[in-house]
Amino acid sequence: MFNSVHSSWQIFISSLVGLLLLIASGVPVIADQYTIIDLGTLGGSWSGAADINDANVVVGSSAIQSSARRAFIWDGEIMHDLGTPEGYAVSGATAINNSGWITGYTEGEFQSQYAYLYRDEAWEYLGTLPQWDYSVATDINNAGHIIGYSFELGPSGGSLGWLWENGAMSVLGPLGGEDSHASAINDMMEIVGFAQIYDPEDYINHACLWVQDAIIDLGVLPGETKSAASDINDIGQVCGSSSHQQITYPFLTVTVPCLWDDGEIIELELPPGYARGVTTGLNNNGQVIGWMKTSLSGGNSRAFIWEDSVLTNLNSLIPPGSGWVIETASEITDDGKIVGTGEAPNGETHGYMLIPEVTGISESEQQSLPNEYVTVVNYPNPFNNRTNIEYSLPTSSWVRIEVFDILGRKIETLLDTKQAAGNHLTAWDATGHSSGAYYYRLQAGDLSEVRMMTLLK
Image (cartoon, rainbow, N blue to C red; front, side):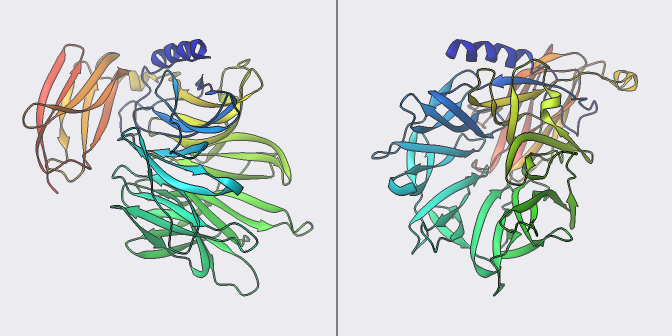
């Protein structure tokens, strides 16, 4: 297995050329095909990818040889078993931030689950809300704030969302009902999920936004009765689904993928032949991913990407004859990489990474390419937590950007990869660093520049 993963790593490196162009860059990526990387397994017959950070590190869950489930981290070459906390045989990973902190869970007897944080090569129990027995951590932002939900098993069931910060949990309350569920958190401390509204005749959830100790009902699509939010980006766009019970067969739920953008709810129209779908993630460029099914009561699952008002089956964007069936998509980065789960060529269920290929640059875009290396001073400067470093490449070049403290000690490598010619932007999230002066060094081709930046908190 590791030999196949190693060859996948070689493909991964060669495919990185030009893949980190953001929408802010002067030469937009024309990505109408993807290279697919098989993440492999931990020795068992299946794996699934849950999240990816800006360093292209992937986390998820995989079967091991004994068929038990374990959390994994994939570092671009090998899938590593994160093990379990002492006393448990099962673990899973749900999210990873840019510091490498991983949220996850363990499982005990009778499907009981417990929220955990994995950092510094150790598992840390996060606890649960008072009077609730179990918990799951669902997401973590770059400041280390964690969200999730506590729940009960049995006929009464129920769940209640929470935010974990500084070692303590606080409740993310419902919309007049009893239950809530937190799904995603961005770097602006905005949290989305769903919460129960008060309805004496039915159990109804609405997508909601928790921000600054307030909860906002995001509503539903016209004609729908329920909704749920699955992700939020740093500019406040929210993706999720809206749903209603099928009239003829009320035990069947019709779900419709949707996007909340600037106060408007947008339906992401499914192609012919698909009966329902949900969104699972979106990036800061407004690209949305999810999956859709051919039947209300099952059917084949296929992953999709939505951008510029067009929803496309991801299976139409991978090389013909690859042997893959891309079934679900779980996360998308700002430079367009996608992770999820699909049927691998050997018939097993495996986690994957899709890397968008640059298939063309128009003549006008070619004329706009820079003719020399140019570094623009980072902005804003001074800055609070986040600053942008903008630069131009006249030719395809290997780019390395490092950050140093005032004593000259390297504290972070922001970028170390090959990029296509054009204008680029790389951000530094300084959350977790103290106020003061820092330096960044950019090396590309014949260019080597050092600039100072000031962090003020």
